[in-house]
Image (cartoon, rainbow, N blue to C red):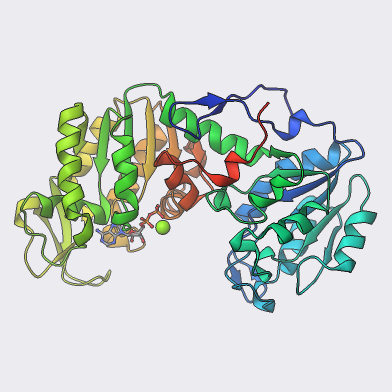
Length: 411
Ligand code: ADP
Ligand code: MG
């Protein structure tokens, strides 16, 4: 691993400072308590996608190679403060052992930390790793209970925060633990902050954000924050219709965020005021039903039929958007352009994905479905960075301070 000095950009607006990383610690003889994001999809006890486990490997391997004993913790699903076997981390221990070729000790416990777990952590030697049970078996976890945080902290000497996907939560294992032992970041957090932070706060220009998807309400604050930073804002997906409606167009049966309607109008005014090139679709693909088998057609945005719903951006819009994207140097993309899960309405999302794969620009993908889309179209490895944290990357783009990042010690 090369010794690069990383500037930690900005968890607070406009402020940049340095945070400690696992490179700043001499690990010989020390025990790391590492918060990972092992919240993997399961089918029974089979892991259907292990990308989150693989993403955690660089930090884990660095720690093991540098003489640390490694205690790993994570949540999985929502057991709601009770031990539930279907949310056990046991399958993760098994997969982690396969991926690393090393033994992963796993000590099941209904209360996460009991005497057996404490003993196993105490006996853990340099170069060995132990995974403890799902931290959300304990009700205190999501309440950031200090007692539970203290118990977790007593399993080791130094807290390593490497769960970006949970860093927007102030829980015992993501934030509270840092009240008791020093906290540093792992490589995954470092990478997330580097790419998301540099894109948002120090972008090469022109800088474009592409916003789409379905969660309009969640994303309006993000758009508001990005208006201060971007040169171009491109809108697609289900959220476009709230903007159309705010301008008086009829949108048929398309997705509408009633509550966001006024804000959408305000955003359009602000964009004009700030000189941001705010781009909305000029045509859409609209269907009778939310189904791939539904009859559909292409319509200009002022001609969406009352009995149809817009499910993708249209061909004119694709041309307009891709021509624009060919001129930019930084792109942040959050939210698909259409219902990309259905082939008939995946065209717009695929066109944008292909375009980002080709352009000579920093391309950052945030959002679970956007990441899935990029993977589906086979261009994931052409992107500069794909964020592993859906909600966390949104809050980061919103300009919020993430509690799980704030607790990491400054250099
Ligand atoms: P991300 O996870 O990337 O942040 P979202 O969760 O906000 O994105 O949105 C993704 C979902 O939005 C996808 O399941 C997609 O089918 C849906 N979607 C996109 N465009 C539309 C549309 N026009 N109408 C309804 N749903 C849409
Ligand atoms: Mg999503």
